[in-house]
Image (cartoon, rainbow, N blue to C red; front, side, top):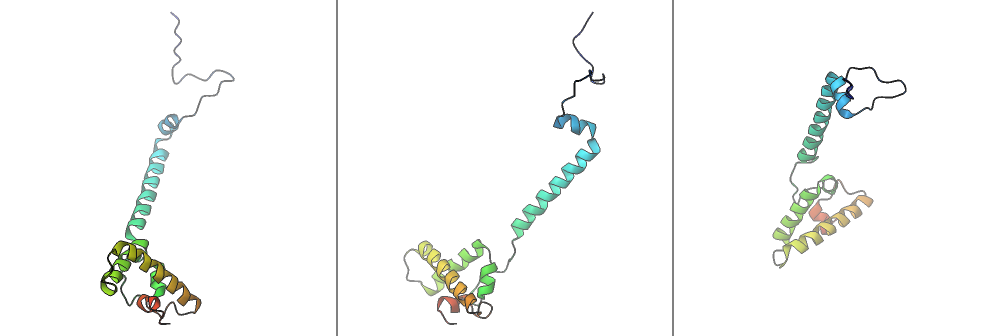
Length: 132
């Protein structure tokens, strides 16, 4: 009785190349596949931890220098902007809009301080008040 089924361990017919699939490679090279999987998992873990930890965990305050402002994350800058509006501009009705304006003003003032060579000496409060 003839069958059309060819066993997996049968030699390939002349001129026919077996197709390479991920499944066939993984089953053929199990140890290498496991090593690659562990390596990729470690890369992902390191990336996630690096992003989660942030580069500058210290909170910003009025005494923060413009140099530290520039290296702070966007969330830290936003948090300080809300704090600035709350503490120094308490009469403003829309703190969200004014916090964005305050962040932009601080950034511009700190850029100006950097051009003058004062970024590591002037605080963000001094920069927004142009005290440099």
